[in-house]
Image 1: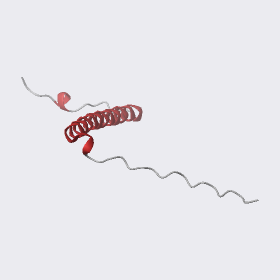
Image 2: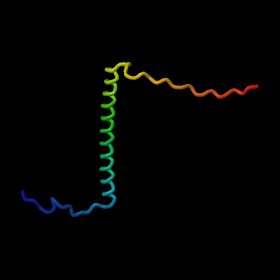
Image 3: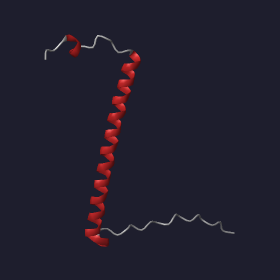
Image 4: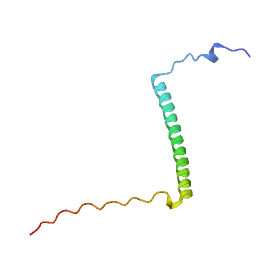
Length: 77
């Protein structure tokens, strides 16, 4: 089987619309892949954090007490 010029080079040029669609498709695929990877990483880190919290128990760090808001001064009569 011999190779011909037509197999390697497409004589028809892509229109600007076709180029834009190809770019849009590629960009959306990249964004979707990044979002998927981010979601996987988030789930993995969440599982590790929950596992670490379970191992450490409640003794790790007690919750800080919040200060009550300052009461306004009452006018003297």
